[in-house]
Length: 638
Image: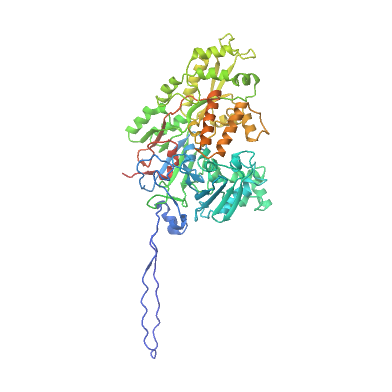
């Protein structure tokens, strides 16, 4: 909008004796400078009313310009089009108060790289960074003019607050995370933060930390929230800045038990930013949570979002994102087939390919089969479950080899994944039921009960109780096949499907003996995921030992300790260096030899479903990268 200012000069009538004065001509209109950027019409009324400043004033001095294959988070796009503004992106999820697709889509990291990787890392929330030669000093430059979603500037004061007033604070800290310690080691020296000016800060470590940039990018779907917090907002609930009586009143009003609980309830960092309690929390995301009712999540465009397209259009293109909660993953897919969902990845399944094809032919959707960032539906045993007989059996690597050999993976790939997959290399993929039975006999499980089931070392029937949640449509049929295979080997196996929330509770409490969940094995090689380390679903006590540097939990066997040592070596090493590659191969060999995880298939395709009118959708690469490109997607009018 061009603003004009007209200056008018008023002339009084001259007196008779006064000489005539030359009349002043009206000044010419002065045009405001043309805007460098454009905005969605969704925001026009707010700008016109003065509720929002013009788009140029809302963007950083140097916004991040999204271009295909260069700094786009998806490297495998068709020709990236300049999009059209408008529309509502519709989602559905079976997870109350959560949708993984939306969480991934709106998440922002300090740094990013094309294709959900660690090659070509560039500044995302920060504008740029520098690293010294020995990977101990990391300097970061903020985007001048970057703003929180309420319009307040983001400065190094927010970095200082996040580090000193939260991570290092005796009231709010549960301990400095390993990623902020030298070499990423739980026992390493804490990082040193230096604030150089309003837009520059430096982090220094005592030892080489080659993987630190990876820790600030896509690893584990981390967000910027450990390094940046809206200090001007959170100080109102912080004991060092607010009055003690005011804080206690808020604690009482919310029915909480401490100032720590109050701060945790108000601060919305990793993952929880999609929850209803985080509605209106300040962020740097493309869409801001404004959810008002359970069962219907809503997000609206962030008027201060820091990315633009190549033509200077502020992103995202789409104005709103909504999500409805449904009963299960099948109900999610039913909404796809009813043309009520515009994007789906998390709950798609190759099992449903004929139905996706039918919906595509009707003009509802498009879909592509892309790469999977996970090995789907891996089988996991809990090696720390509180039962001595169970532990004796499952911690015997010969038992695990026999169990692994009893799985007919070729059948799983054909029946469940329509042939879009391959036998695993992470663990031996050979199917040999006869040899599996011989191994079980050789380790003392040759005795049977009256029903033919193998006995454990205590003389009782040994049972594998598989409990799983409806995390994806392939979980239930895979669990049924696994039960058949284990029973064929003579091991009594039970199945139980439970609610995802209950599943999480039981896993975190160490109460799950056997379960199904993905293995994020494809991302292990670049170090952006670490479920190869002890986790609650397979080794909760070893995890405690690892996380506490040996002070809690149970000391794991030598092979697991070596796995942890290898991991720490990889974190300290420069990614893709000779040291990193050698340690990665050792990590994989340890997994192969010990069969801690039962991967069922590798290189399995992943279906990405989008509305038929949606553009700037990936055509190759990892399907989950499609979520990260949500701000680039738009609905074509023709």
